[in-house]
Amino acid sequence: MEKEKLFAEMKQAVSDGEIELAEELARKALEADLNPLEAIENGYVTGINEVGAKFEEGQIFLPELIAAAEAMKAALNVLEPALQQRDMSRSILGKVVIGTMYNDIHDIGKDMVASMLMAAGFEVTNLGVNVPCDKFINSVKEQQADILALSALLTTTMPEQKIVIEALEKEGLRSGVKVLVGGAPVSQQWAYEIKADGYAENAIEAVKVARQLVGK
Ligand code: B12
Image (tube, rainbow, N blue to C red; front, side, top):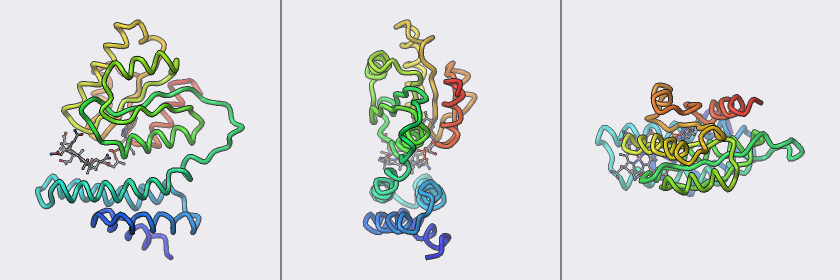
């Protein structure tokens, strides 16, 4: 099947909240040997963005948003193993602890960042969503993480990133770990303000910045 047509169908499947169809199209993409990242970005992400815009404009409501997100996650479950495939003989670039801020349950983008970092050769501990500050701190200590990656999708949970950075300082851990921030409402300006070490707009940029942060 033609690539662009498949991407259009992926977008539509997310938009319509069609879980099984979204999954089936992801399998088709793998069978056709398409780049999984291209399928995610040009297919599914365009669908979820359209749904987000409609939600903002009041054209659709939460149940439709949830259905779209579930369709997207089902497709990612199929594609992510392919995204993570890498040459295991490569040395580890560094250790990353990643999670979504407290009171925030968005994880689609955060999981993409986690997958891309793994694919690039980082060892990733994914703490999930709604992660309290002390859980981030404990994990940084336990893992002796090189990078702490913080995801916020809500303007109300962005300040949690600042709280975590301040807690790292209080615990005397700040100089030993680089903090990378991201999520749709997060910006480079915000990263400066809260004294994060890096910001990236998307999963591909996140890998580039993470490499720079560990000097590789
Ligand atoms: C899907 C979705 C949901 C799903 C989430 C499902 C899930 N498992 O994640 C559900 C339906 C559960 C949901 C719930 C809510 N949502 Co919502 N949601 C979205 C939506 C449509 C898409 C988000 C998404 O997955 N995008 C696709 C991914 C691939 O992109 P991404 O997340 O931005 O991630 C990329 C980058 O940001 C970056 N990145 C992400 N994390 C990180 C981390 C690091 C370290 C780095 C470097 C980079 C990085 O890389 C990623 C990959 O390229 C957005 C709108 C939008 N377009 O952003 C609204 C949106 C974020 N939601 C919104 C709202 C209001 C809510 C609710 C409060 C709704 C409600 N009334 O209950 C709840 C919040 C619940 C909570 N406490 O968290 C608002 C937020 C408004 C604001 N300014 O704060 C948005 C913007 C919609 C809108 N326009 O109104 N939502």
